[in-house]
Image 1 (tube, rainbow, N blue to C red):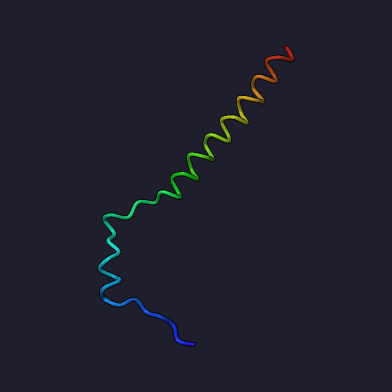
Image 2: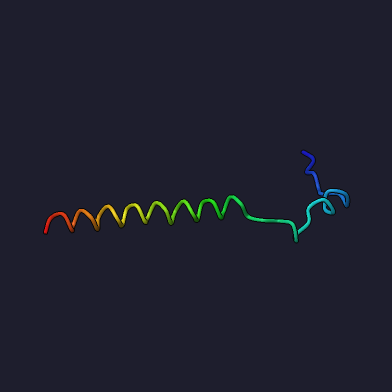
Length: 50
């Protein structure tokens, strides 16, 4: 099996300055929203019981 190594052309196309972790940022925002919904649902549940 032959493994492909990146050539000079492909390395130049990938620019570190233009890299933006969109997937990681979307996951982090989704996680924050999920935990906010979870927290508020429990908070309002506790308020309703009093």
